Length: 285
Image (cartoon, rainbow, N blue to C red):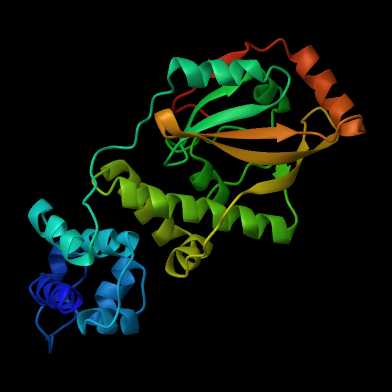
């Protein structure tokens, strides 16, 4: 019964949504009221067939899909809470926490000569340590999203970092999967929604991954960092969650006793950078 009620609610909202209110252009005389299934599917990042099965009560959506449909239809709080209740989920709200607490900053400092940076759940870098800055792996573009990892990955890649095609694909899939989870937790965050909308409209690889999400478990990834003064360093990236502040720490390590470890030690030792730096909207170079 609940799934049929959920389907009926989605259909009613779809049929009573003015296309112009969700940014769709006028396309002559429309034969259906409100949005077409294909239009809702495109806005929500699912298939038209999925929307049809959902409206027929034959599919149980995830919390993320419920939030995506609510966002696509730009429904009010009451309708969003009703959709969540019919799907069996608790509604979530609030803004992505963007501040690193004392404990998180101390964690960054403890890594010392190991490059580490902290990001919020939307992949905005909030703090880095001196070892990360010593890598000098990218120049600023002056864009407001310079410090957003997803934006730099899909729109303005850091020239000093390279991966194999396989590792790059895994890294991108992980970024999108994490952003999807963040959208589920913080559906009311306008800045987060704006980031996702911008990436979906300007990056085909991002949009493709958004439409066909993959489950990504633990993450480790290898990349080559090219220092502007010459030389390459291969580092392994590990993602650690910092639950209290809903942050993520990306830790970069070199194989013990390797030439990469020696080169990294030289760069960090010669950089004279502060141990920890809070960052904002300036570039990451």
